[in-house]
Length: 89
Image (tube, rainbow, N blue to C red; front, side, top):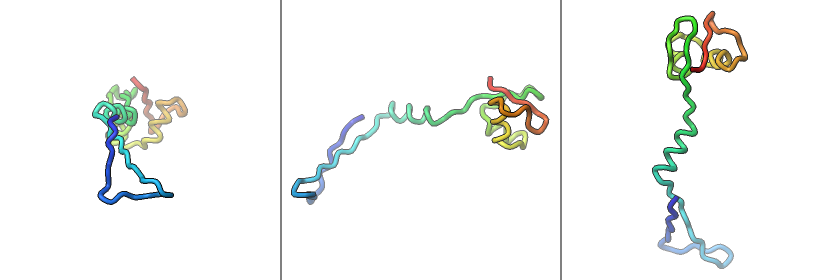
């Protein structure tokens, strides 16, 4: 990350010392890594129909089932949801 020093027009003081502002500007690589760590989409398959979905959200929208229920099924905490089973690919 690049550090950028910001110098205010009028210096500010705290306990007799001038306050310096240093701002860290992330690079594109840092931003991409942060984005990738937040995105946790994993493809899943509907074992009843054989249809593949890019994420639990897509499967939920297509089937009309609860995202939480699908999540429990793919993580092995529940046998099925709405009569359907799902697995991570």
